[in-house]
Amino acid sequence: MSEINQVKPDAVVVIGAGIVGLCVAYYARKAGYEVKVIDPEEPGSQCTFGNAGAIASGAVVPLSMPGSLRSALGMLLDPTGPLHLPLGHLLKAAPWLLQFVAASKPQRVAEIASALHDLLKDSVQMHQELAQEIGCQQLIRSNGQMHLYPNRGALQKDAASWNLKRAYGLEMLEIGGSEIRKMEPAVSSQYDCGYFLPDQGWVAEPFLYASAIADSLRKQGVEFVRDKVLRLAPEEDGMWTIHSSSGSHSARHAVVAAGAWSAQLLRPLGMKILLESQRGYHVQFAHPNVNISRIVTLADRKVFITPMGSGLRAAGTVEFGGLKRPPDERRAKLIAKQLKVGLPGLDVSTPTIWMGHRPCLPDSMPVIGAAPGHAGLWCAFGHGHLGMTSCVHTGRLIADALDGHADTGLLDAFSASRFL
Image (cartoon, rainbow, N blue to C red; front, side, top):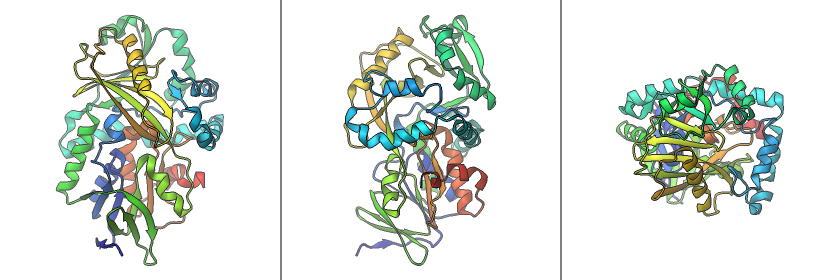
């Protein structure tokens, strides 16, 4: 029988050390709980490591929209498109895709946008407050984002999305070619219009940010265990036993924040949640030969460009392929090709390439809150493209719920019960 590492009866074990799990651990510890974090990898070294760093409080639009659904499904089978589904993964992804289609109904889109607004609003301020507390405020930037198009025709194709964002209070300043080049001289003259979003922020180096949170937690006595969680078992006394590769851990509360691997842990407990990995890629250039001062998005090409401390990063492209399929280097090279159009002076000769698993649910909303029918078990996963934006609020919501002060009005919208 495996040895159980005894902790306090009101202790919290967080499964997952990505940016969401770290924020859950941070606010649970701040609420006075003894906290342990279990992950087989270094904190922040997986999906968090490779993202574009955007803090997008106005990103209330789900991936599945009535007007964009037909084009999205068309892109799925195009290996050169920004959204790709390999034929070998089609059957496995079919249940997810059916729910994706269902989420595009106008009434459901309105519900999703409202819930995401409540989750994402004030996210830049929340990050600034957290960064101030842990001493890395220089990593949170607040000089806005640019979303650019080659012409007004291309911009109008996204009009429904922009109108929905505007309806929820996103400040959007329309800019033309001369203004674009004045703000970011390196951008190609092919991009002639777009929006400047002055209130949207970004993280200058996501891995350093995650590492700073982890360092702060260690100083507060939080234990990090490098191990793989295999299964969760409820005990008769209300405790949870977390079985891992090298032992077991016991806690009153277990929080599943394992990203794209979360559904695997919950399935044996009767919770079948449609969670897919949207395999995201980035290319990064340590010596790019061009400079930009903020996130610049080539919106027509779905490419996000961020000036990281370690180089210029371009992230984008979505690929459905599960957790086991090896990375497809062609997807990363596609980003580099698209990037050269937007930044013609870029030196693309020596890129580094990364692929990670973004945990995505078909309605573009995460699962946050109590696991239905399992007292003491909590969910914090499925944030997709919005993990960096919503991680702080997610951590606060879980910590409040642990203390019996759950924001039920908000958490009901993100409950796992919508899939069960």
